Amino acid sequence: MQFALSITIKRPRQQVLDLFDDHDRVKEWQPNLVSRTLISGQLGQVGCKTQMVFNTFGQRIEMTETVITRDLPDEFKAEYASNGVLNTARNIFIADTPDTCRWISENTFTFSGLRGIALKRVPESLYKGQTRTLMINFKRFAEREPQNSTK
Image (tube, rainbow, N blue to C red):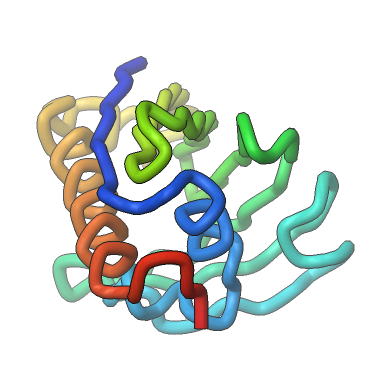
């Protein structure tokens, strides 16, 4: 399954990138995130592996994030592996104007094993909805920040 979503954020691209890359503040826009634990590498850098735990729909979901590409300010790509599901997310950041940034999230889900087969039957709209909610949460978080300020 593949899909792409985009959202325009009313902040300059560099400010959006600084906030997207601020690992200490991720819980501010990912409220279901319970914990993040570095497994190996340097946070946010290519090859880094991070264990992430979420509480989603009352269920504990563990996944491993692996950073694949870090070509900022243009692209950040990571894989998110959980039991039976692999999501490859390519995030692109485009400066539409000096004061706005368009975030495009291209997602590819692959499924394996018995759990993956079951999750493949979940409507695509649920996966898109979760991604859209995450993007809206980030947009609200970023737009609450004073212009050109990341702390």
